[in-house]
Image 1: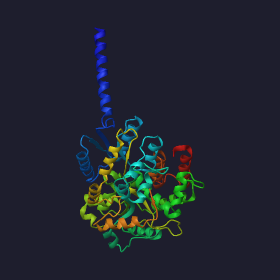
Image 2: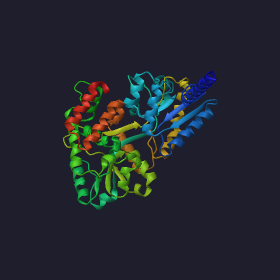
Image 3: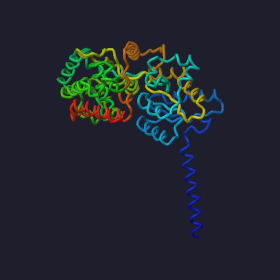
Image 4: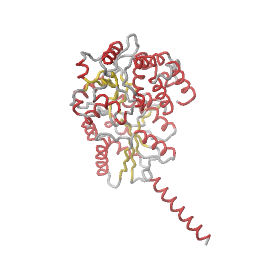
Length: 430
């Protein structure tokens, strides 16, 4: 009887193991007849746009199927990390480029796409030259720009500016005067939902650029001679942030508000806040979420700082926003590249334009006046600084966000924040 029970237990365990193995393999590149594609495109019409591209690919590649998965940002990062750690990555996947992608590249888990691009030169030439920066390592390209040109700008409520006879500020002293005027009338100058941390980081990145130019961060991030996150420019940027906080520039509770559930946008819609520093994707979100408010929306570039070394035309953001890559374990990389070509073909790019995005390709025809101004802003920018939390390694990027949030909370001095960031860099977390 005992032997019979043991036999049943063994069979049950074997069955469960088989189910686990099968489920673990679902969604991974184990067959040349199935291409597994993962991305973090869950907003607007992009999931349906991508699915339409998949349908075109399957029709043109008989016998090959695509299994797509669209996952929200943070869960997507965790899912991708687990998949690569278990050596069961998807065949095609997207990232934000920069340090996160380089981590996988350095561990040999991402295919070099340079040969495919050379064989398909006309396809490669469609993209803006600056879009390759975030996915290039040692002269080799590991991702295809996919989604959007997105830079941080200051969105503002035109009616409130008109009501208080204010003009969009172009310099820091002018901005501080705008802050003073709105506070005097009981309106929060800025809406900020900084529970997410990267939202407040935008201020810090722009201040570093305006004060010292793009080279200060690049030298610190790469460990070049003379580069340090304890550079006086980083300290000064922290002081400017805390000057804003002490001047009452942000609606109360900003470090606890959640951007993902619209914490900052609700302040704009209600008129309780006048401005928001955010990526240009915010315009598309507002247009869908609150069309009437969109008619009252405008933006201006981040102001210059008198005496600063940075060019006021510089922008912080990304030319691509998302980048499609192929895992080294993918069995049919040629088919995977054809899928990427379809996901970024002319029809797919037209779908992105229709969804109020600016795809990272040449000669994009836009009709919305606001988005055309965004396009002009990017075209004239001498420097496009990739978001710090994407340019840096994941661990160092998280440290940066933690310290930036602490600066907004006045729980750390600018000197201590800069020094702790440099210590994290020196400890090998980058």
